[in-house]
Image 1 (tube, rainbow, N blue to C red):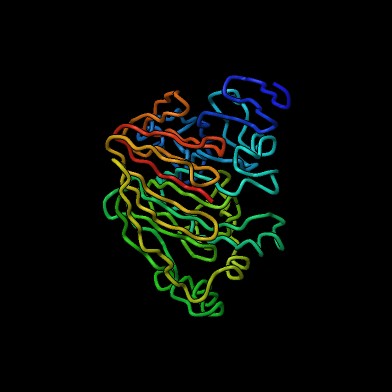
Image 2: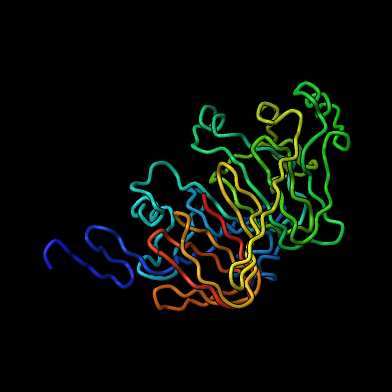
Length: 336
């Protein structure tokens, strides 16, 4: 057929110069050891973690500090970072300008995380030479009774914040909130925050690894030295006064799916999907980042069926027009 070339490589081929890729992209987590980590990523999700102090699983990541590996299809074995650079049309882009924008993690706080804050894009570019600051959001997957987070602060100005830090008036300075399973928190850049002991969260964030520690409970590293703090940078990027910026949840029912939009802001839109049966959806965003947080089911694309279970993470690329989900399953779904 003249003017029409097709090159097949399983589900990856080119048709008239346009890439066609007709399956979801499943990813293998990258595990990060942390001083506050534990082993719940193994007990709750069945991951084969390398030791008992794993604090983070970077489950959908194209960040240079821990890019996920693709585990299925014609791109199996390739890192998501390389896929983003080589095949931008999978993400609805003509070319891969800059970094992949989002990063999805599961965090196991076997101990309190440091009290910290992240910069916005402008500060990250001007001071750190990085493309993105770090706005994030948390969905509480599991927690022990009476677990709490640090969220916000009481200072009205940078000067007052500095005074309370110098005086170590942490109880007066830091806001604390009790949490329960299923809670959701929006944590924009400039927000003082910390995940408390006994909490497991799914975190969806800008693809950034910039953190400024304000307080770390006087903990020491493996060599017996106090962990580094970044007080000056933290005071510069913190928002004054703190303002809670939670959004109203929007619930929709589509066939057997209850979709609850938790946040829709500049960097990401995040929804919780609760399916009990089946639903057929068109792809209405450039791509979707999907995490299975409970249950099991299937995703059907182009006549092919892919099983889904708790702990799976995958991308529905821009080259898939529509898909079908079946089963009794909970999903967290994010896109730009």
